[in-house]
Length: 325
Ligand SMILES: [Zn+2]
Image: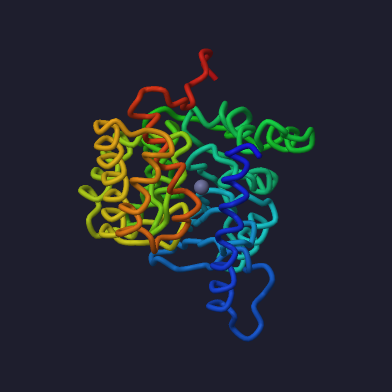
């Protein structure tokens, strides 16, 4: 089985037990079926996170901010049905329209509901590289044996209609939402700052107590990005791409994981280790500190081999299209 396909499948399977636990947590007397994809959590000042229920098919977290004249949504889940469910929840909270959807990056678990919002009149916004990669790089998650239907679904995703390079301010009336490019996870990631609520939507630049997918990662850049985020927003609520929202301490803990991983891989390489020997040596060391994190068993081996390739300079990461899009 193709390794990436395996990881995707294994990741979903690994999180199924969490799904049961999470569903118990939200099992108030008669939970509406429309909210089973996610748990809505108010973050104050008309900002909400929608934390994915593992195994529900939502795939990743989302969230939204209500401004003076409209709503901005961050990410659109792995399933259009999950986006429809969130749109229904938004309509219960406000009659204002969704004006913007920001895709924090191109990965399929964050963009598959774009069409739902576009049909409702929203403008899909992302860093420029997402416009190309959403229809190309997402194909790899299906592996070499991708079916025609899967290929068509990726190519049919609604891409960003507005693209920016380094920074963009969006306004919902007087309310300003700051969208900023940060490197590390894919090379096309946006962080969404709601400064008047002290909320930072990190997308997959932050995984709370969860091992990350490093398939496109540049970990040195990523570590620097996380340092910047916590230094500039020490008291903020940080919404992760996977896992619950957290504090700057949680972001620091995640940065600690990437730092430890990089250091251990570098030490192993200096000692002449590579391949399975490197994985066998480092897995128990990482397990000591991070064994309780979600997806540890799913991603630890791949995290080690990805970082080994990165330090060797052989890692294939997405590159911006040669032609301007
Ligand atoms: Zn994700």
